[in-house]
Image 1 (cartoon, rainbow, N blue to C red):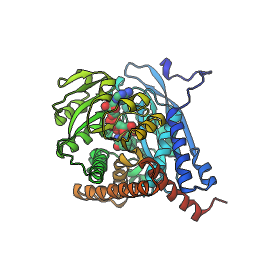
Image 2 (cartoon, rainbow, N blue to C red):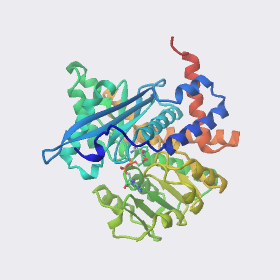
Image 3 (cartoon, rainbow, N blue to C red):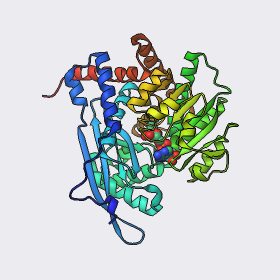
Image 4 (cartoon, rainbow, N blue to C red):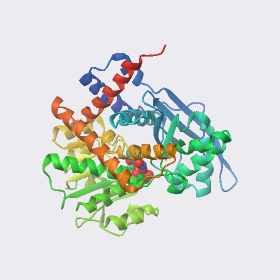
Length: 432
Ligand code: NAD
């Protein structure tokens, strides 16, 4: 057994999750803006279900390790729970709660027929072989059993997982349910490979959605994007696609970072070369291009746009004060702390909040789910056109409310989301 992943009988008291506290504070603020009925606020303050499973996995050397997996189902009043699965060594319950809550608010803001969920496994996927990852994923899926399903809870990729992970989950799930239900269950996960029922356009969807937000922002601010510069923290699925799409608009990425290091290149990186490199597992610490810099130098570099696309709690007081950009576009979930957010606001740096900015991913996941249900295959043009319309509409609604109520885009996004949830609760009432 691996020491770090083996449950102990007495655990040291866990540090409170800054991320979860920030989500609570944010909801509190937005609830006041829309006069949210207090019983709805109370219902939304906790997830409906918190599922934790411990399960053994056989390693390549014949030993067994016990892993801890989570699935948090926050709210399903709008539809089945929906949200990513994260494989990461720092995974923990309270952060998954915050992530699941934000999925409820994101789906509500985007007018999707989904609720919010999130989950994952505490593990370091980079330290596991492909076979170990497959056994880990399949065992976790089996442990979750009927807690997931195409009409109940639909996971998707997040940090440390991808389309291969989703294919394994789908295959395991359909093989462990009654055979007459199998074909209706391809939609148990989204973000699958095209061969296994995934949709075209899902891989770039989150980055594409971010860029739609950036073009809307530029229009409102009368900013010409061509010739502008960006910093991208996290060059994974979200960051790399955002950079590639921005490059087509003439925006050059002059700073990048991942968990191994940061680099600057005032001439602009070659986004395609960098994306190929990181996709093959290359680490930015070892990348040949630009010059290495510290994390502080990255955050204080002068640029027009900053895209945090790594983890939560990355922009705190220090980063917010050091920053030298006009707009922060939150690709990651929860990248800005409450203190960081207040400083950005004070300094007049615009923030396009996560539940809006990175909603392109779940929106195209919805398109995949619809295609699976209807046994259809849409082309890229159809997916892209629908996504663009959905993102621009959500951006406009958020922007207009922020202007009307003289609040931040974050407050407005949560307010719109809470409004929809409150309307549904008002119409349905609370059982019994
Ligand atoms: P990914 O695993 O593909 O990439 C994560 C990137 O973050 C990697 O480059 C990694 O090196 C970097 N990173 C990890 N820890 C870091 C650290 N401590 N400092 C700096 N960099 C670090 O994951 P992804 O799917 O691109 O997700 C990135 C973020 O976007 C997450 O917050 C995720 O929740 C959010 N998000 C993802 C999607 C999606 O469709 N994948 C949708 C919405 C939001």
